[in-house]
Image 1 (tube, rainbow, N blue to C red):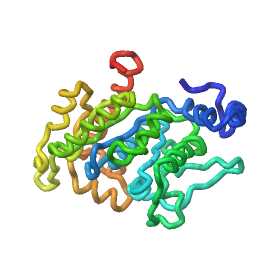
Image 2: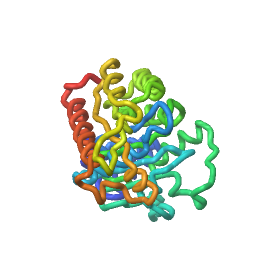
Image 3: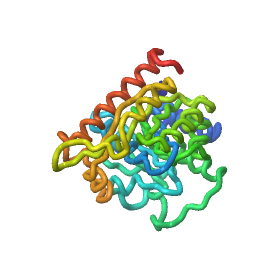
Length: 291
């Protein structure tokens, strides 16, 4: 529930809790965010960050208040995919202002805090945990309907930190159809079970190549593996997204395809996944899905 007494950029409740300690301030910030979704994958190269960006953007296009937090500290890609440049600003009371992609879409990434965006970040676990905590407590997120958290692949320090800092978060698992990706995704799902993170469901990315010339789908990685695996593990399947060269091009130039191709098959698939995510969250809220 959102703390109704917590209004404005520096409310009295936040100031009181700040005096009580950083953990209370962290909780104050999180209380103003209705849904927290951590986007995970078992291995790299499955398009996890793309799914995080497109889900966040799609929710914003539906007029929700959305934040996107990139905690892939060693390989951040979100700012480049959205064409965001420059460092984040700081307010007089030392709160960091997120980048605004649009008025209801806020973005934070470690890349937007580095003078040299190509600098290597060499940090161990405890430092990572502290940085992720700061990303929540010291960022001026305000009131959000959704906070989408783009996590690095695997089951290392970053997802462990989120499980500790945001135990109410829901995990969205991204995979591709081939068996090597599905084997790693099972580990991610079991990780969520072990640390008691709610699993929102699985999204199968690159589920067939969309050919812009013949308007057909070519199963370059096969299809249906993600749905079958989700069924076997007893978790929801949220939908499939095709592989499309236009998506790659849009990410490279910082202009997501959602901006220009409203009738495109990929855009329609993103919308279907977004609707499925909203419905799955409603299922958790009403008790129709087991926690």
